[in-house]
Amino acid sequence: MAMRIVVALTLFPVALLCARRPDQARKVSTDKSTTEKAATPFVVGEQINYDISWSNFIVAGELTLQTKERAKFDGRDAFHVSAQAQSVGIVKALNHRLNDQYESFVDTSSLLPFRGSKVSHHGKKVVQSSFVMDPSGHTARLADGTSIDVPRDTYDMASVLFAIRGISQLPGSSKTLNIIEDGKLYTIRVEPEAKEKIYIRVGTYDAFRVAIKMIEAGKPTDAHRIRIYLTRDQERLPVLITAEPPWGQIRIEMTTHK
Image 1: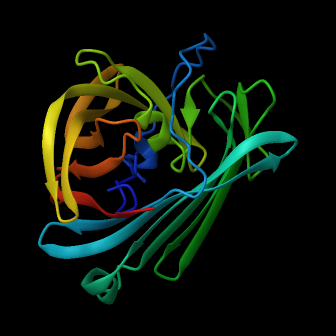
Image 2 (image 1 turned 120 degrees about the horizontal axis):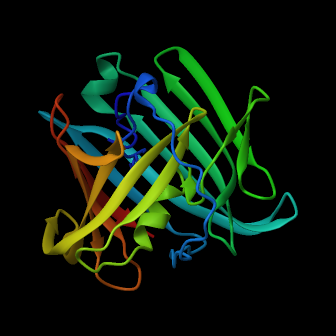
Image 3 (image 1 turned 180 degrees about the horizontal axis):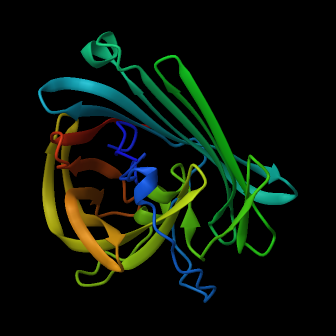
């Protein structure tokens, strides 16, 4: 699937950030080995808003990430997080009306999602999907009743950015994450690159640049040049996301953080 404005992820993969077309989805290894526990900064009440710019459009869309609450869901202590991306302004006026809404429930112990849903409005077309992980976390039941095997470290669009925020910022290290989207699995490689000072409209930040690469034929590819800039503090805020797909440059810039 082409990368949507929602991830442009991302975010949004990867969302939202960097999903490919469904016919390009590849079978991923279902390695059940344990991996390091992410130190993702879930803060109840946090909301981050972004403007999404695409090619010559000043603002083509808006992205909102939220940690809504911590409560019991399906008998499990969980964080309820959401992500919403929608087209605005001239892009919406040109009949490119997009509105993708993701809801995810993340186990507070494993920091992995066990339930997620998505509602997509593309013009007049509405598409809904969902998944529920089994207690072992090895399979996901989809909305149509079918199940798929999933590897460890599998996230959805609403939760994957939290996992990225929790990775090591040591250059040369990397982490492989999986994303479940519309009943298919995608694999990305998260690679910390270097420190960088970032200038955006709301301020200047000491950040760390992280590359997001799709895994194709077992190898990482940097075709879309997706980069996430995380603040070098305890919050690790994703203040900027950029990408360079063939159809134009994309810039997702933080406008407010609560």
